[in-house]
Length: 529
Image (cartoon, rainbow, N blue to C red; front, side, top):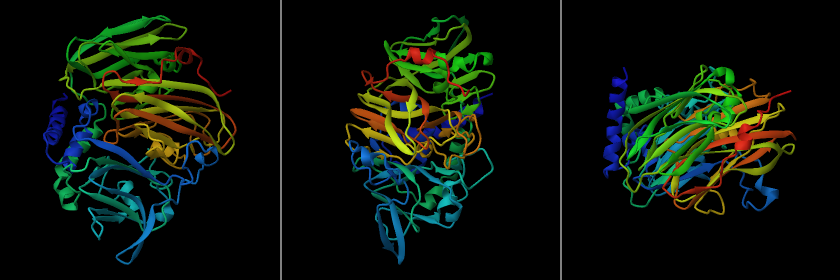
């Protein structure tokens, strides 16, 4: 039944094999890498740094200066104004050296429908790409879904966000400009090492890659499809404090499919107090409640992204590739106060362990209450700190708000290898998760997803909101350490609850600052009065 789709995946991944063999970095090789689940589980074959250009408030220059660090003028910011071919243009991103734009986000403002974005590659005086900004990022220009889309399941094209995930490579330089004063924007791009052979994006090459684009789009649209393997299944009623575990096949192998089934009547508590644990090569690497691990938070609402899916009947699936060299074990532990019925299944197949192979990690942090200030930044709330060598692969954030006020002004700050100033400075929590204006009710895509939240509309954020970002090409490699903070910034003085699941890959021996929180997972879920 799955054979045609598996053949399609194999055809697309054939391009990735060529790229790993020393061929140039090209649009087709990047598309192949995008849908190669194994690529994240190995250190990049072609080394790069993941960087960010954004409209963050330029007053933020020192993390130790509380007076400016929480400044919130995260718009109308740019690098410089210049004149090109007689036009006045605002430069919003510039990089010298080989690289690739891998993510571009903007809020879709109707008043700027005619604004043009221009891409200049390799020092060219004339733009290689010049299109309407809103149309490019909402899938209404030459880039079509799923590579460009609107972050909403509603039929709207304004008052929400546009997200572009088409890889746009360049050989020696990239400059991006707008013909009007910029509003908000976030651009993630790869900076390859000097001398890396990268083939610059050309419209002729893009048109020649039509078949590859269609194949990759078909694979991305089949969210959750994965190659099979040897499957192990167990089921039981797990009493409080007990677990249901599977010892995986010994040797060089990898988990390529994971399924947990719960009784919907046990929700929402089971999504928080039932915890997924995994140990690979005698090292615990996964400890995360089911809700954040699978992307639904504490509501059993359907959601689907490239690596996870949740169905309302209690079926939870994940397709992270989880390699190990000798041994592996996966378990669901019940930290709640009553027995729960659980089915657990894992699909395992062979893996070639080498000096680029990494273990999969997942951790969880919860804090309630977090006391916020009115219309001001409160703190930088740490998602994760790691040591060793690895690649950051995504996260799922669940926020509980007892008031209707908007909580999502907070910016992400990502510090790589001991940076004093973060190389990723964001413009808002919603911007990081790919939507805008506080308008999204729910949406699904390979890259970002939000199950239906408790309240609809931009003016009521009471209850729970869960958002996820998966990093297919915009994974963040680090050589020594990574620190990820999210600023807490609410329009009301209130008490919020934050819970985040973080996902990354790391070489054996890596460490992190997120020990298990069994008491937090076992505690009651906060609800509105």
